[in-house]
Length: 377
Image 1 (tube, helix red, strand yellow):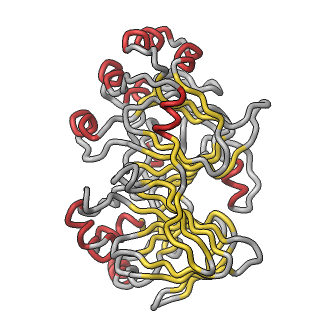
Image 2: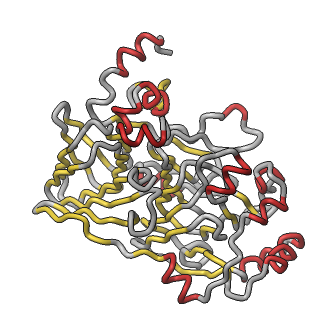
Image 3: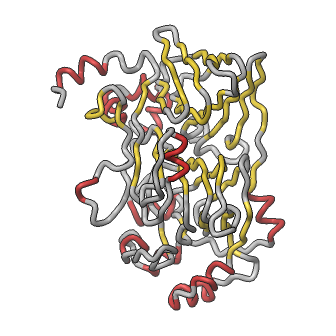
């Protein structure tokens, strides 16, 4: 363990260059993770570690795992005893940005994950900010967005998602199905969509949803783990405790967190499926917006596709970076860093621009993300 003094000394230079982070895995009630391991060039079977959290300052909320309180929390690759959260807390203005720190303190205001599901997740919902403030004393709810990056057929079925209530739903009907634990009945209340690589789906807080078996996706969300589940057992047979269902607020308040607004299929697809847009083209690559200010001021997610090189210019706000495919070099005025598939970085706010060069004969694909729009909060 490094001394506090050594931490202070290293922290002085952490804001001068991209901070490489180790892979942070989190235990979940569902199984998966095989495709996630393959992304890292590893061979592994599905397990209850189906998620990798990216540039995360949030710990997973799991019961009966007191020995794993820091699951999901990102650590520095060159100093694994130090968390990104600790580094940010020492100097939030230079790491997150002065305006961001004024509005949100030491919070990044965002959480990003890679999720690889080999089974359907339980039907769930997340509280909006008003309910999260009352029920969990939290400034954040859990609006989120999924971007599909791959998938696999499970038992002959293509990857799919369940999203939003059918137009005929009522709260009394939903409560009845929940109390009976009629899983098929609850699933029939939701729209089912087959999804493909490149699809982006926006999920507002209060909207019921479930990731289907075989989905491999990026999830960007508000920085909480408040997940309210209506199934008492997972698809693979794992019992779900009462606390893991209602997160300590009780079943009545849990059911109050659902938006009981039903839509027909066309309305649901139009409302929640998002088309990517080109943000910037350079001779060596293209930056695409996947989710952003048009849909929400809570977070933004882009994908950078580089054939040769791309100069990224950014406002003085932090940026998260994850390499989806390929290898290359990222250069700032202070340092050059090699990057490759499966690696993640935190780009401090004080860095105004960086150059990314492709070092392979295939496309270099990188996710870039950030937190709330500081002009809108």
